[in-house]
Length: 223
Image 1: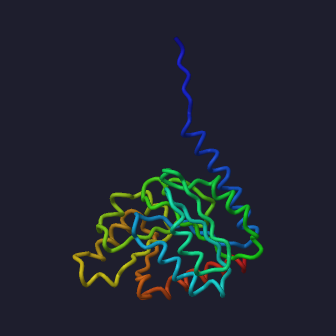
Image 2: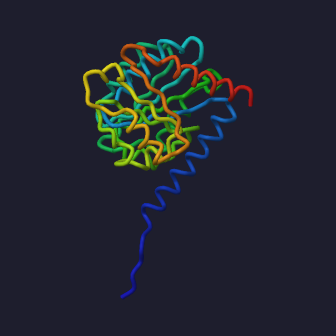
Image 3: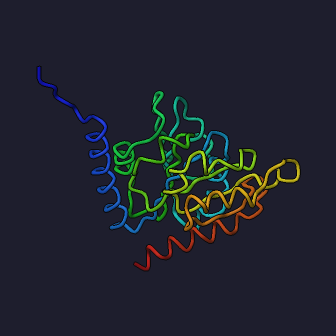
């Protein structure tokens, strides 16, 4: 009896990557910088985006696509801080967003009216790390309430990220958390990774994040 092997995973990833390249070309042609935010649940991604919209939305036109397993709660929180469209992708149990979903979301935007696109991925450090969404870069957000060894446990997420944002640093006085060790683990996995230390709740360190975004947008426009 002959055996026929069906390469499902390879075919799915190839289709995803084709969509991702289309997205990347469209965003590049329009001068839009796009970032894919990935993290564990509860790291503070949505609060980080709320503060970012509050500070920068009038200065830099921003669009947001949020991914969640069942609800639109994050999108509802974010829409209070902007007059622009916030799109919610409910995955119905799926552990990550894919490029086809982002392709459809980008198709609903007037790219001439935005300069910055955030994709808030499903809370998960495994699946989202391996899926290209057409972004300029992945940014991993981790809370100091998580273990220092997260970069070692989930190396793909940190290896593929341009930046690691250590959030909730206002809680450091109340925790037994070795921030230097956590940064060392991240750089062990990815020596080129950039790091920021913020409290999205209190605003501490957030100016560095805003400056990073301003520089990326200015760089896209200059290009």
